[in-house]
Amino acid sequence: MAKYSKLDSTFAALADPTRRAIMEYLMDGKKSVSDIAKPFDFALPTISRHISVLEKADLVTREIEGRTHYLSLNANQLKTAVEYLEQYRDFWSDTFRRLDDFLRRDDET
Amino acid sequence: MAKYSKLDSTFAALADPTRRAIMEYLMDGKKSVSDIAKPFDFALPTISRHISVLEKADLVTREIEGRTHYLSLNANQLKTAVEYLEQYRDFWSDTFRRLDDFLRRDDET
DNA sequence: AGAATATTTAGCCATGTTGCTAAATATATC
DNA sequence: GATATATTTAGCAACATGGCTAAATATTCT
View 1: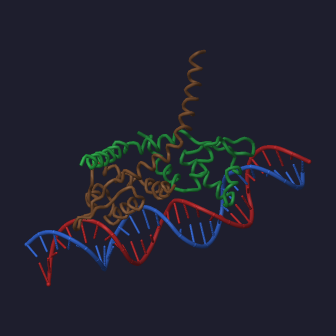
View 2: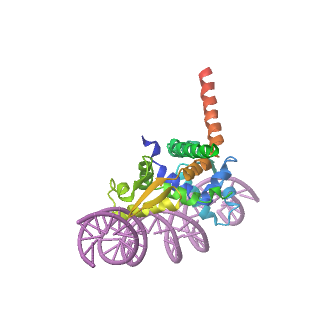
View 3: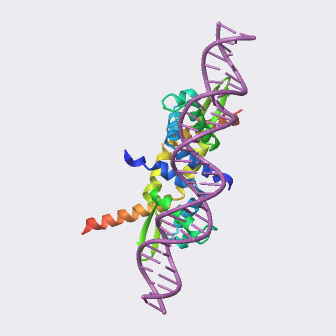
C-alpha cells in the first residue's frame, strides 16, 4: 500500500526538537507562522523552513488567509506514523511479558 | 523526564528505509550483521554503519559472541517512540470524531 | 603460525540539512 | 500610491549523512 510512502520524510521531520515543539504547540489549535516563531530564538525564515519541512512530511497543513498562513496538525499522518510503529507492539508486549514472567518466578522462591 | 531524551536520534534512525527494513527483519529474532546485510545491494560497511545508527538510537542492541555480532530489537525504545506520538491520540480521535459527526449529519438529510 | 571469517574503522566524495542575512512577494492600511 | 505587515525565496557556510573502497581488528580453524 502507498500508505507508508511518506515515512522517510515524516520520521525525518520528527527527528528535530524544534519541529516537535512546533507540533506540540499546534495541539492548541491552528496558529500563524509568526505565532509559532515567537518562543524560539531563531530567525523567522528558519522557522518558516521548519514549518515547510513539516508540511512536506504531511504532518501539518497550511491554510492561507490574506497575508497570514495558518498551520494545523494533520491527524492522518500522525496516525499513520503510529500505526507503522505499532506493528512492533506484539514484539514489545512479548518482551515485557517474558520479563514479567521472569520476575514472577523469582517471587515464588 | 529523561525518557524522551533520545527521540532525535530515534526518529532520525527510523527515517531511512534501509534501517526500517533491518528493523522489520529483526522482528524474526536476533541476527548477525552478515545475515542482515544479505538481502541488500549495499557494501557490508554500509550496513554495519546503518546498524550502528540503530544501536546509537537505542532501537537495537548488540550481543557479541566470538567474532559474530548478534542484533536484536530493543522493545523499550520502540515503545517510547510510540508513547511520544500517542500524546497526539486525543487530537486525532477528536478530528476523526468530528469528521464522523459531519458525515453522520449528512446521512440524516 | 598462517589463512579464513566476521565485523569495524578510516578516509573520501556527493548530497542534504540547518542556521543566517538580504531580498522578494503578497496583502493590508493610511 | 506609499508604507507596514506576514511570509517566502535565494544564497551562503558549517556540519551531518550515506554510499564507496581499503585497511584494521578480532576470532576461529588447520
